[in-house]
Image (cartoon, rainbow over all chains, first blue to last red; front, side, top):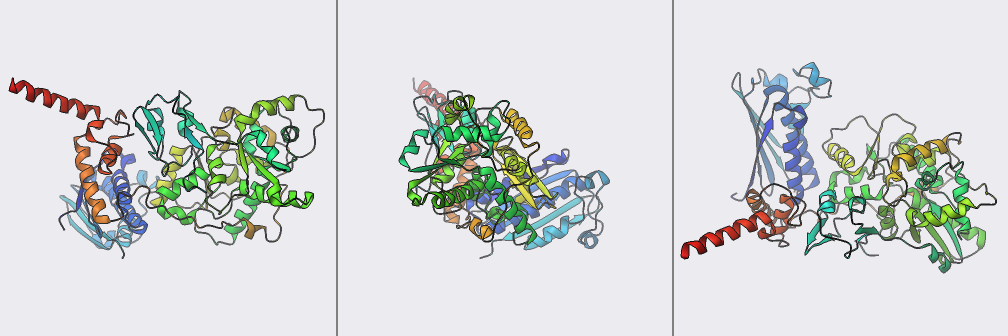
Length: 142
Length: 424
């Protein structure tokens, strides 16, 4: 479809408190478009978790969002260390987040499992030492 | 009743078209056109922030007058607990209640009494685990309206219990009818209000078809006469029947504390409320059963229709609560059912949606992003919209034009000038 709305955000890795800005901005736009509340919630949560992951593990990155009438596609790309064992990272409760992050209530090992739970499609391309690309799609349930 | 009735109104003569209210409005409901502010009715939640900020006092809240009591055979004043925080050295709320009767009301019934019933009902509903958690208090009508237009996913979390004002009005009317034998129309229930949102709520309620409150008088309006009679009371009637729990509802955290649990959160001030709602929407707030939200800083004592500084009033409320019994009002059989909302809270998707047709909405949004790119991103408000983004939105909605932006206008004039210069 030609008339997708494309949005591009830089997710800063320096300031932890700014994580969640991209998902917040996308949420506001989806409301203006009249997206269903359920889809908005799923996009917001999945994106937020992914943003937090990029900040914790990869010193930030980029977030590209394509909004279509029936779905939202998000690509989160970083130049972080990569994920050594994706299968393990997908397990609930598995986390490699440092203690200072955990003390803020993050790093409970629910990031990737939650992204999977709230999105309709999810794919991870990761290379050690190069970075990670996470694709996710949320469809509007008709 | 008018779907978009508002207590908050503009006094056009006093408005000088500055940007103070524009920048302050939490729902971007104000535009300045032709040198005057204009309130977008469907977006206004009557929080009163524009009244608070306007240096020219051009924003006002409509409310009723005391003289209107003559329209009824029998009248009952139902004062908000915030009223008790307005007086210096107040020993007991009986002085205020007796004063209200001296002003002409036949009887009084404190809203704080009903608040104790609402607290009991809430505790019961939480215990029975019947509501979606976390439960968001429905007592602040500005917050309820905000959720209704901006937070679709949270509508189901709003506690479906009538606010204490409405419960107080119902109990007061029933008691008055029993006592006097008069019909319901002959009895006038007058709420003494700390804020415009509550005035709006009685004219266009969220929770019920028609409010049992007949009129609302601003605390600031009744205050001068009330203090005068209070200074000359010969006898003080023992009228007060509120416990510390009900009086505590006047300040932020009071309602939440009355839940008698520890898994609660209380936020006050509209910006803080919005932040909490955003985080709730994204499911970042966990482990909390009950959420109290007050649009005004400090809670109801911070309402713009009070006369006293919110924090001074808060301190006085603390003093008044000392040595009071915890609660003096308890539910009877059937009370809980009578307190439930009659209407469901439904999200009003039309308010911020660009168009019903998503393809059209997407085109509008693309256009909007494009226009926004060309704007200066200063959010100066000179165009009459609160932000550059809001102006871009107004342009695609056909309500404004690009040259409303003074920087765009300057650019255009410069272009015309350059072209003309070339032809000479």
